[in-house]
Length: 151
Image 1 (tube, helix red, strand yellow):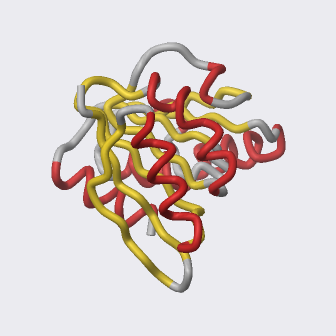
Image 2 (tube, helix red, strand yellow; image 1 turned 90 degrees about the horizontal axis):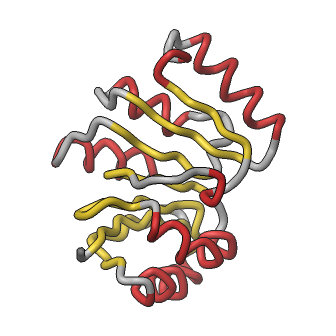
Image 3 (tube, one colour; image 1 turned 30 degrees about the vertical axis):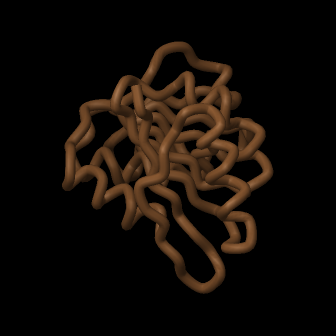
């Protein structure tokens, strides 16, 4: 779901930079790089995940375009035109205020890893910080949200 939403977002409006929060194996960042994003920054709190992400970037010959940083969205400064996060609903809700500060003007945010029973709660957390809903994708009890800034 998240990759589908990511590819649709990139087809609709390409970007040069992407932030991948909770990157895990870096599949979202690497897919974005393959789709034309010039530079991706990927964050994870798990050192093992960052090692796997680094290895996957090397295997795909994309390591020179991927910056890996230990930590969450507070570990970086600045804003990005596109932010993706495929993690569970509770951390996504908790991170709403900081993720909002990582989005540039007219920025887009793709969230997944959310069960359909928690979709409304996640949407509400982001609405409270000024991020508007664009689209929800559903599949087998899971959702991916596409959102955007209003500033």
